[in-house]
Image (cartoon, rainbow, N blue to C red; front, side, top):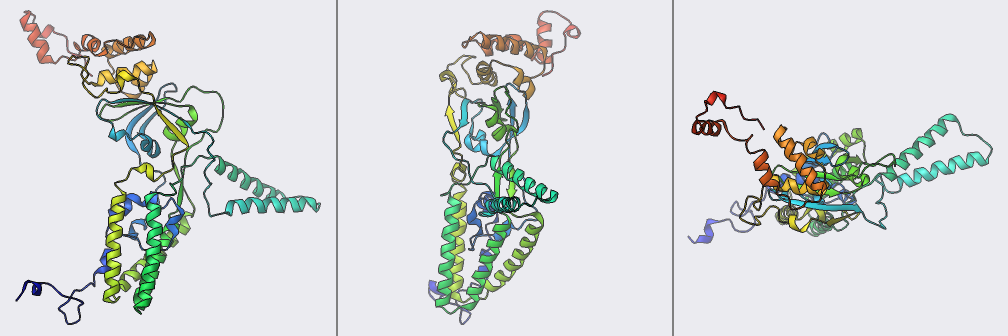
Length: 454
């Protein structure tokens, strides 16, 4: 008996070949990768293309998310004092705070890009334009014929116009035209057509019905989940202070973003909303129908002939690998953030705040030194207290006042860490250290004042 007799050979005709009856299982594997791409995948019109996709059940959710994922980081307004405990999704793409090393410091200037046309408004193609054109035509025709518009009609037209006006004015972040997910969607659509043609050539009707059913399921579920990200916009244009914000992550890194109030409201202070094309009730109906089609297609995939099972199984393996590989690509390749210009204006002496500059107490990276860099650039300490960056003690308040004074005076070479050791260091000594010092000076331990708490 040779080694080749240890494994199946060829097609399973006499119970001694390969069996691919569980190829339908490959259609539902890869849910974790698809779930991480679900929002970016369904933000483009390509999500409605009928095609095979790995784990379509990842889109079959009882409810849809109303916001984008957020990052834990303190976002504090330098001038207006606003405090947000999380960082929104899109600014974290512009400057990923998770990638900042401990005690790092950076200053960015973010402005609206010039000569940028507003992105298209959401909705089914031309629906909103047709609705507006139709309402204007009816209104004009009735006025020209001498008939006055009824009050209910006037109210309806006014409501439509107001809603269209508000939707057009809201800033949006469209997906990249050539994003990896869009490319995968188009290629999988073309590949699905090729599989159907191949099944027709092999006279495998079951494979044709199975591919058509699972493609329709992905198309229906994709349309039900189709959405557009909408950013917050200022309603009034009154004169307000600058919208500069300070972002502090859990590793002690600080990021100062210099921007106006419009940019701050869109990216940092406001909320990112998910505006869907389909209502909630219709979404549930479509998801239920898509679930039924998915179950039918799984049964049909297990009854295709051997050649089509091998082709479909290989297709799902390749698609799973492609979607997993796309998760390794930077997120700015998926979203079009060209409406914002980002400029790094970090001072030269603070660019390596996370690295040791010299072997002194002032030259070593520390939270105090990085916070001093931020105070030096903002010339304010209100954001420090508002965001809880420093302990609330009298000693720390004294150090913050000294830091603000030196920042206002332009003393960029102030020894912030040495002063902190002198002002706050005594208050941070432990009870055991205080008792040892008292013993050396022959002072009773009970006369030693308790240390201040941080």
